[in-house]
Image 1 (cartoon, rainbow, N blue to C red):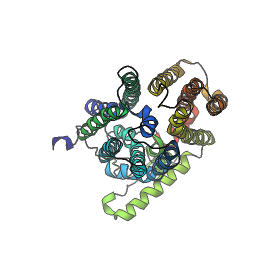
Image 2 (tube, rainbow, N blue to C red):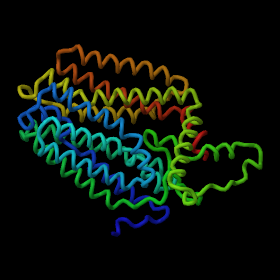
Image 3 (cartoon, rainbow, N blue to C red):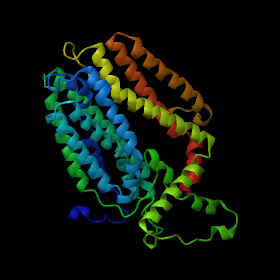
Length: 403
């Protein structure tokens, strides 16, 4: 098939376009804000207790269990097959949501959705293996922007169809199935990368994989090369032969990759500031995922969907828009985040904690909505500040990028 042909050197526009189309259809799921009302409504007829205690936790544990092995698989098979796996998982998820019934079937839904979220690393890492370094910033901006736009459009569309057209949640899931199916088709047209961060390194000139989401950020280049570059000893700067993957057995090569990953992590997180920010990032993201996973249950408890108007889609759309605005405005704030970043971290984390208490103790659905909006906006703002911290970026660059 022509779609499996290797890309031409220095070609970035075509894979970026296809990846943006994939990201748009992948995020265009108007049914997502209405998952809990759908499960507890007449379509699935599940109880709130079953949804909260037996179904939703499956996503948390499956995502945790799959994240690291999927990350290694992503690098080993060079991204594209994992994007196809993500597309298949999305289709299976929505087929089960549409046509399967019972607690066990919905637990399978959560398992496959855990696979979907675990394989997101392939989406964020793929582009760095096929474009040159001068296009990283532009391409990253395109990919992230298109996903935010798609999420907003999906939430607005879902709310309009529910509130104005009285469309059932079943048909919202049918629209989502059509959208993720298009995403799966788009993935076929992505060029197959020739290199990756660990298993398929090449010393020849060309695009070098850049930092990616989550664990992938830890391995853009070998620290040994950085140390050679910083060393005053000319002998240390002399090129050293690199072992070729084909000369060692698969098991030995895999162990070598894991050892290199461990060295990369050790050298990178030798920076105390970077360690603090990374710990906050990991804990905050874990907490944010839990809030997003269960917030619809809280909303349904405060204003039962079978007897009240549901505005989940509107809330998600506004939350995404506010998050985009706060993230965009950070670049215009003349603040030295290296000096005041920790202060901002403490202040906005305290605001997030206050929002959680507000949502828990308030009996008003509107207070819950407002708390969620502020919570998500502050979380995205802090993520942006973390990436804007020059000292943290300098430490990461010092250990891995070595420009």
